Length: 329
Image 1: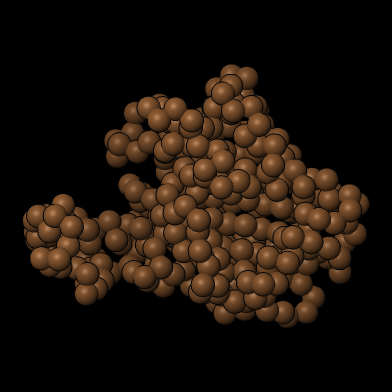
Image 2: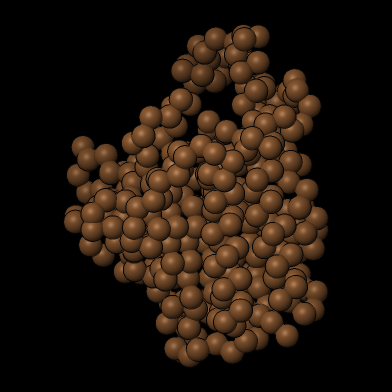
């Protein structure tokens, strides 16, 4: 009786896990997914009926695949991957922080949005300045979704540099109807974070909001609550929607929510893969000359490993909340 929904969970460094949430069980292949997005963008400008699919794209930040991080996310595995399909041959064009995000939100390759001056830093060499690059968003696929009758919402980490979004005139970029975006934070953090898990600054539909470090201020939970409330509003109005949900987890400093700070056994060791503490004479000299991992360094690596898993529990909470709501619509 409600909208069908395609739910895609991705990381900047490994592929996507899509699932179809509709009245009939269905599996998506990567070809079907690409065709779906292509048809949505090439379709004539019409307002979709209630049987046309919503799209949720959730992207984590610096999540690993080979070290088993999905084992921390029971809900994602059971409700999305096992009920859908995992793309095991999915390639990220530029698997580096700001360029990867910029390619997604602009629908352009990095070489088309890079800085032209070789000495300019930009955002990891991407020209995100709307003053210097006013057509940055002109080809964004969100514009095509809007023309096709979709409501678009963005929740979480939009980019590393937020020119004109987190500073005056506090713009909402073209293609977005709703925005709750994490701003580069100038407030002092005890963990030294550039972006945040607590004490965050947000660009909320053209206004700046600040949150603190209380139980209701945890960033991943705020992103989840805002996205869930918006999606509930869209489904209640029977409006087709595209939701882009991008928590900061499990990026360093990987600060877990208070209620998950003791989750998983402690000490918990990062996997000792064949690459662990391995050197060889045929490596590049910079790698060859690196000292072996000390016991003290190994303990820090193990601590970061378990903290990353703990932050992903809050992402998993978003997954179960969204899937539960959409299945009950």
